[in-house]
Image (tube, rainbow, N blue to C red; front, top):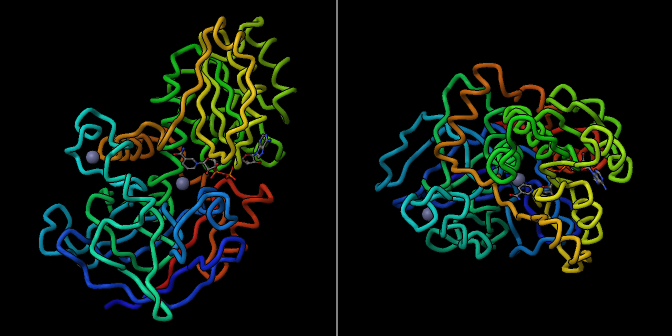
Length: 368
Ligand SMILES: NC(=O)c1ccc[n+]([C@@H]2O[C@H](COP(=O)([O-])OP(=O)(O)OC[C@H]3O[C@@H](n4cnc5c(N)ncnc54)[C@H](O)[C@@H]3O)[C@@H](O)[C@H]2O)c1
Ligand SMILES: [Zn+2]
Ligand SMILES: [Zn+2]
């Protein structure tokens, strides 16, 4: 039994509660990780706000990095002392999806919503079993995770930057590179430039886009966007219509990426207006309704596409090492993404700052 400090959600709409929890001893395929940093992704806020359903109580956090403390009897790929990042979707390497280059769709991901991949509850507090977000729960200074949820990282990589490689960076970068399939010379529009969207901008730039237009209601994000590769900014989708039309002589964006914090059904039609004939609109941001109104005739006759996206279409075992190489060679910015650091006790302030548009990515640094 290991004692840990964790941010627990007891009830939707209530703040994260920081308290002591007990973690079970590692099962055969488990790894006990001493967490060092965890990113504050908007997806956890959807659960806290009650927009995304989850079995409660739950330890939050799905974007984290740390050091292996102890391994279960059947674990062969990780040893104590190894530096690791969590992949927010586990990857078995063998299922139909993993074995065809779609680790982001691994069948183990089906366990995420049910909250169990090991045996029984693996954490508890106040005499009650706790779930762990994405089966990892990185808003805790220790986590018990299945080895399928971990990827090794070099010791030279700072923990805060490493943590973002578990969700925000691959999800955003892959939105452009894998799902949007941005080509050299493309025009790309990214709507919502937060922790995910700013990395979609980086992916579009690295894939050779000529124009990368960022649409964000927050002026702080518009001001920061050129650092990551944006060539133009706009404060609304309406404003971006004339901007894109001027830039592309009326063709519009080859690829659109929607990464606002909360997707509303009413955003889809104006979003697809920014996309060219034969263009693709990538839906990365999470929405909860089913009320999408589209001009179906235009959608069909202009041969538009709307593609869902989980984890940027990434294969964590291949893409996380690739993203680390890009960072080491100076082509991918990670340091600049970490815009504020909080102790775990201030996690609710971190989320307030995210909603106020103050952060590109806020990060919790754990203490032990
Ligand atoms: N598909 C996936 O695999 C996946 C993974 C992680 C996160 N997400 C989702 O991606 C979305 C973005 O997450 P994040 O962590 O980057 O959030 P964030 O809060 O850091 O960023 C959202 C950005 O959208 C901007 N914004 C909000 N409303 C807007 C509007 N109407 N027009 C233009 N800009 C607007 C905000 O100012 C902010 O900069 C969330 O819905 C999150 O749940 C999806
Ligand atoms: Zn996330
Ligand atoms: Zn799999």
